[in-house]
Image (cartoon, rainbow, N blue to C red; front, side):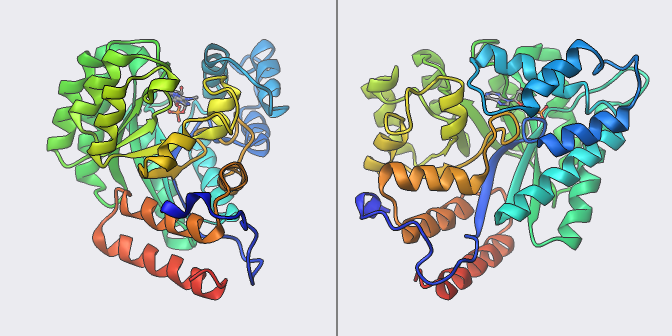
Length: 360
Ligand code: 6MZ
């Protein structure tokens, strides 16, 4: 991976085939395309629904997306999208479409994450998760993309909700071990106290769930230290760990020695203004330090991006070759929450692609 400064030749050398990619950081409700939002709106099709009137206008703002937003504005938008995924049928439709779109982009392995939600009288949290699992199971049989589910805990919603979600995740993991594989701690990075959540996450880990925790999306030296000491399997964003990005030497050394992989979401960071530009992003120091990076979309709907676009941006900004990118995907596979057998199949598929496109 040290050839990061090699001459940029990201375009396919012999083939126009799409690169085979692994997406490990995608929030379901942030990934809905305008096509899906419109379809969900039609599905809801009721004048007194939550998504009517003002809410739908805000939703159209997402549909006409591409805009920059602060993190606060971004989190307001999530609650608008949530009003459209408030029945098991809508959740299934959302999951079906997101998997299909990632597959169309060239993703062969997808870890979707989502926060269980209950809607009084309409949907329990179990039904929410079951709806996603059902769609994933169907897609894993019929499509050329393997999908897993990571259950999210929203740090903004307090400890009781977090406990419920972790218990549910443990239960779903024992029921569907081939699909429900991990826990994510996400939500507004300025809300909630990380220490409250760590014992719960430890319980999840001891039940066999893997952990990916959002970390350092905004500067917070104390919190980042606690997360790094906790040693999750992966961290999301990792934007503000380097001393030049609101972190510290100590944190940077901890990360460098940890072997942890960082799920990097460049467009999300740019649009929420947590980085000042692609070229000024934390991806530069991460590459220089040879810290494993996993290029990801975060919320492809809200931020109007795709994984291939994130790869293109990283390649152009940091002069990464197509070979580098394929090796980065192989490295991403090594950090997936899959079985060894599934990892071997993904590696085999990427190697085959590399051979056929003159990348080996
Ligand atoms: C932290 C984020 C996020 O779970 O309803 N989420 N949390 N930082 C981010 N960076 C922009 N993007 C999304 O998907 C939407 C939820 O994912 C989390 C938030 O909790 C958001 O409500 P689900 O499928």
